[in-house]
Image 1: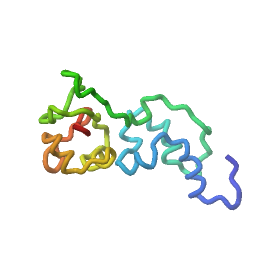
Image 2: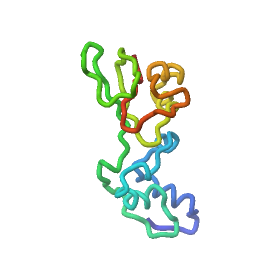
Image 3: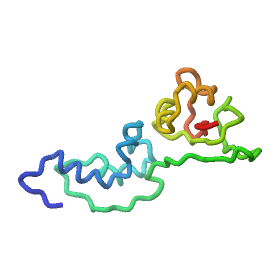
Image 4: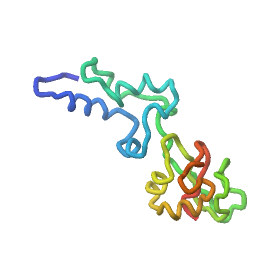
Length: 146
């Protein structure tokens, strides 16, 4: 990257962040590079939290898949009798048709918002998470459609 006199620290940081595998939506939903495996932090830091005074990192880096958030829901068929993934949150409705794996930084609100369901409906489908979402377990599946 060539720095010109008109470049600001903000524009330098913005240019380097284009290669960060975390999207603005990930960040709004509470993700950070520190939610990924520890080995990812030194790889991602120059791109996700760049220092404008440091030398420019390599453009278009390729990161290991483990250093990219998994945002995909798990969908099951309504007719499959034992299609539910494991583990699922306790007290999840038995009529659930689509599940989502809870990831670092997720909250009941962020999951409900991402899948366009009300928080009230999310809580009805996933009664085990508790009224204040205190029992939302990392790595467990929650119902996002029934």
